[in-house]
Length: 347
Image (cartoon, rainbow, N blue to C red; front, side):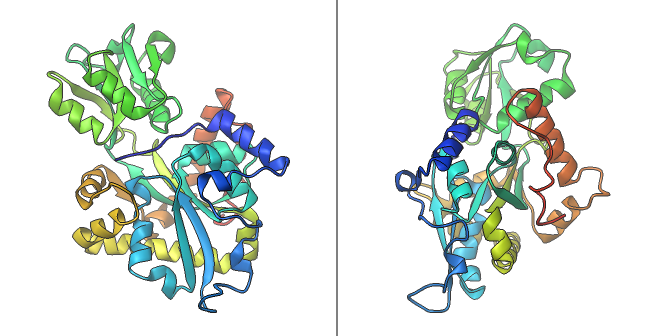
């Protein structure tokens, strides 16, 4: 069910170059066109004369799906928002769309959001939506018992996916080897990495649900060496907003944030009904699919985000993201680790 197809480094540069030349990918990806201020700065929904048009985009992933609860339960409408949620699988278009204001809000994984920002995307952090808590993992054959045992072995993964960061941090914190000691096969797609492992073509693979559970059940001796539950701060999803739009429409940003918190509360109080709402916005996704994914996720509501934004906390959002930006800067994928403007709405 999961579709996180990320190609940020070169794609971000390309999209920003197109933006500078006046190019637009909105027609290709299905996003609505508009200025940086968006339609919410205008007179509102022409049909009702009451609601303000707002556009949000994300790919098919359960972590973002509480936004469909907010839609189905009428939270956006109650807040005076006519929310257009667009499911756009081609994440290489995101930097251009958020920078040009063709979408006002964007949900995607935290480290790609940081990569986009540090490479010039005009986005601002709003909140953290969820954390992977076992939904991603490294699965290996029976003879590989520890991370050190990966030395000289073949590991399939998708270097463009957010789980790649988790894998590298796991190697850094839990082994005496580095990526250079492993025969890494970049599959370009995490699902394909799982398929390669289940087909016996590699010794181990970084995968996510549902392939993770499928591999553990179908391959004799297969076991998880490490999962995102061991490194819960490495894979998270965040909501960002176009910077100019946020400056002109702070009340809309606050209202969208409030709708998210109400949706998470509804999910916690009415899970079965919530799964139906969450599945309703995706194609070929069932409530059962959602329920399975939720088992490996932690959704962050109001209190959790407040705790994360506390600078005195040992693991606050600013330090976590600075570490992430520094990590990718050292690898040449971030221009800077200065995230001051990125967090300007909450700090």
